[in-house]
Length: 150
Image 1 (cartoon, one colour):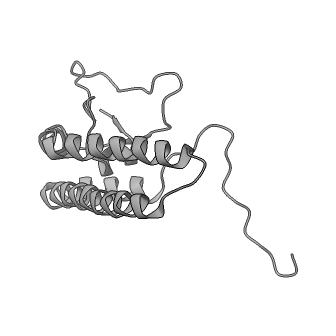
Image 2 (cartoon, one colour):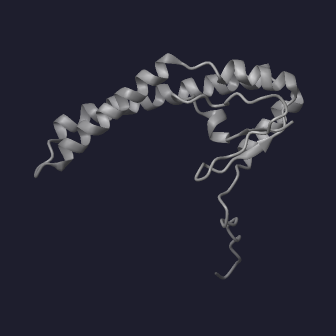
Image 3 (cartoon, helix red, strand yellow):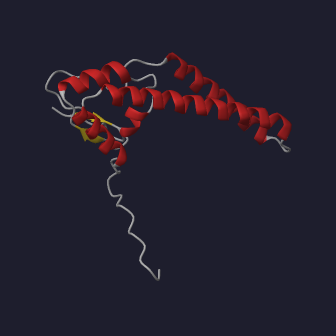
């Protein structure tokens, strides 16, 4: 059985939508039209259960952080839209945004590390390989290595 998981979905804290939607047994999760490219990660039954428990449980603080970041972005847009930008008003917004982004990244990394620690070795390797080599959209090729003299 395959489990389709975006490396971003694994690394990111789930949003309002679950990162790993439930499907009937024996079903393969497939990307929807216009979806972010995904890589199929083959996890054992144990690995799927562990991932569903760790990643499938939403972090309430993440929603709070995302909401506050959205508010800050709106406030910055309003401030920047003016004829003159008051840097003294902009600075605390940028500093708060920086703190929130750091907290969000820390929470995401903690969840990923929890998942990696809980997974069996084979599942851990499959997940890490998928993250190191994310799926590319159709038609996108790997960059051509530079040659001397170019």
